[in-house]
Length: 434
Image (cartoon, rainbow, N blue to C red):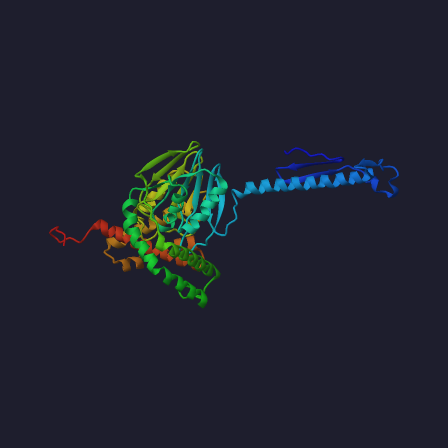
């Protein structure tokens, strides 16, 4: 409770629990009566000027009221400053305090076809660990500005949960601000980022403007990418995609791709003076390089794109045959809080368990199709994920389209590729490779 500030017959107290101001009035207004016969005080002298005593009383009253207003303003300033750490105003994200000195920068962009990841701040005794950068330096600078409103401690490590563009392009913003910063990634990033990553980047840059033009024309025509009437959800999604791709393309001539300087094979443990931070590789899933950041003391897991909601992001560079087993290991960590690469904070395991079911179904159905000798086209005709489309996308026309592209088409192709690579080229009856 704050100290009471008395004045004459007034007393008031600030109550932190409700941020209310309680006033109790116990003074008499008899001085207002005509003539002031009973309450008028003898005149006082001030600098040779005679001032009625009741005038001084009124003046003191006004000064006291100003004191109240100033104190109230100061309290509101302190309260708003405290709340700013967890609810910083931004059109692109909201900073949520997950636990003591653990903050999540949760993106506000609607789920659609292009992405911008959540970022996490782990504030230690002397420095900060950041998990994931953003799709461009423009967005990463906004996130860094939010961090600087919370703490002036330097960033010591940036953990890239995997090597996809939306998680790494903004890395150099942290290097520019903190020249001694180290970048943590899985060892396979050293080979995947300069090869598969470079190929994907080239395609994104070459096709990006065409994609923007297509979305703009669809919005203007009032139809979606499938030719249906455009819904408001799709309009918002396409508008967000245009913004993200535009920011990405604007920076593309100046991309600074930073490879990890600290490599993880299976496990890396850090200590920040307050807690233990475990950086784990649980297996192939969304990529071959997915890292999970675990805070055992707080029972928090930061899992990158192993989990994405509301629609899973299986993707063309995924490993559906192992994905489900990797998620089983994630489930075994028994976290109370799971922060996904995209989508809201999860405080139970229902979504994780649904994704495990989805990946198990994809694996089993594609394996059965390949065993029959089906082509990819035949495999896609035989695989039925309608149950899961309804569970993830519901009646949403837009989310159903996202599911079709980032789950059904990409997952079946990736699983089919894996199985074909595993079986190798066909052999002749003699056993020799043809």
